[in-house]
Image 1: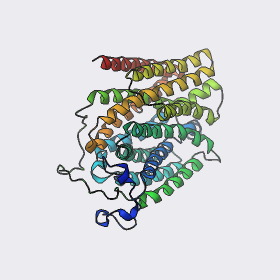
Image 2: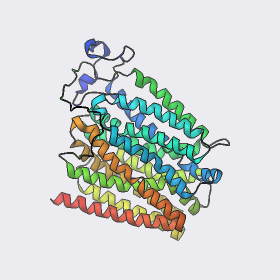
Image 3: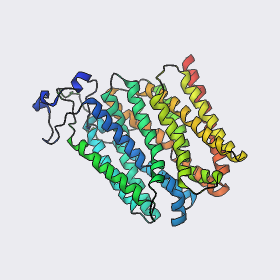
Image 4: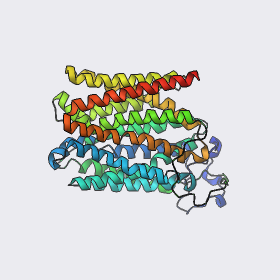
Length: 428
């Protein structure tokens, strides 16, 4: 998966049987000779992204139990969630462009191994510091994978940019949605962390086997020769695409706002749902978080592609409305509004973000796709860190309902402002 197929390869070349691959072009050890079909490579890439996002969110429904057993505060919980983001961002900034030079698999395989190590660290943790170390390792692993996997899917599907964007976003959001559900389902025994994270680590280690055997280049292709700047692996300054800059900025703003919503849901939804539903069952909070993120992933995966530029504006408006319903549910004591608002917000976020993400990635320079995707994801992931900590601090000082209400109002106004900007773009 290092370079699952070179940019611009044709389907017929990706499907060449192993015997037709010129051996002088296969410059890897003998064990790495599996010239898998393009569909297999796409499946492996999606699996990696899905599993890493599941692992980063397994602990979401377990935070209330951890708060009781380790005497954590709401700020501790949000800090634990955002430590992973703060570990992820420097990796994206420093090495996000490496897959453009070293290849996609060279970034993905170490990330899978690191994620397994993070799982085992989290499973054996008995203090806030140990939990923080496990979260940091998970963040580093996701940082290594995010841009590389997205760029790999774009490389594999050069003639289907919408499909590549759809798979990237659906795997990311789907993993975030499944993580809480699996964490709650596997919460067995006296220690709620052991079974979910040990099971996940075993699955990741099993995934390493096909990744090790997979040949990193498409057979029968001459390696492209491009002039490289000196020290191409050194950290680069934050940069934007030279073309398609406006779609990039709109996508980044939408991602920042919607991932702020995701971050608040993942860190505080269990407590918010427990308060509204009068239950301590971890599946309740997991279901609320999974409904938002699962509906987003489903919308991104199943909705038919469209070129209508009103879709982002409509989606962002629906996201703002959904947040309003989520807050209203607590004031009028109607749990149905919580689920309705979460579903509406998830579907609308998925439609808006996918439409903008597809436009942004289609306009990126193929030779710098990994680097430019890294820049985009840095902005997006910032949304799930700083706002989440702020809401956690508000929760500790004023309570969860006022904190969530203030956040929903700010996020809703931001959604409406971005929606207006997307409509102005259509008229220009």
